[in-house]
Image (cartoon, rainbow, N blue to C red; front, side):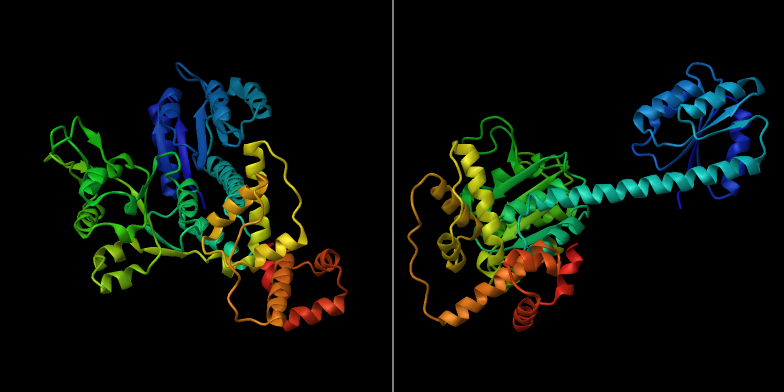
Length: 444
């Protein structure tokens, strides 16, 4: 239950009495002698109620009400009035004030009005929170595309982790979308308005790595002309994304660990410590702990980076996402290149679904762009022998069923209509492939 109250009154005796009444009743009270101070120090998204006198030197209670409504139309404001101000206060309630109390008022009257106002405030804030969650869910569904169970799970994990102040390790094959997931962790969290700094550890020569991370002062080494801010310092307040972290030299791993532990760094050529507040998201293909056991990575740093871990499935293990992703990449390429998009044929779909996609989503995006440019079908090697035609047909059928069930959130009638199957046939196929309707209802 919310219990924050701001009291604005120029009379010290009124402020003192109200503070005593409210504090004894369990409220958190902030006092201001003028409206200007209240406005200048009002927290963003204040989760409480404001009680204000109407007549005060400078800005009065009605002007304060107007300013507060501009900031938040749903913020409850209770006005304290003298006898002659009652008609004015009634008019103010028509304009948005929550309530008014005529002086002198009893503690019980104030407490009763406050409790009702706080209950209303709590409902408003909870409703806002629910709307924000829906908005964010819609946004992330437009960023991390897919209908597979693994993508639904990934989106939920990202939304759970995004607001938390913890380091995250993302594991996945080349081209599986690790940087996109890192961006989502940043963009949907409290650091979204601060820098997102990406660094590919495999792309930096070892002799330049320390200067790239920590920056340098002028003359710190041969060729160091002028002061340079390093990636760690530039990411202060935001997120540092370290891709292919397994490629970081061991000497720099020790220095990165110290920064993470102490939240301080020193530029090359400087003895001055600089405080940094950053979140580290690292990405890797191999298991960092196995790398540590092989002596190629520091075990203590691996644990420091892996407070939370996200694993991205390769595209070949979530083939039901391929049609949606291909359509998205084709449309994006067509808009960028000024070309038209041709409808996907059944032969094309079969070809896309049968390929193993060693380059994952990145490879699929490349294929879609080549198709838009009219460069023809990709020349892939024949798939390895291993599955019979019947087994491949069964796998394709299961993917189609799972995709339709996910798309329609378990609505059997909608799936029957899309796939043009009678109820009995659909039930038999679902049973044969181990698909249960209830498993798809949670995504509704």
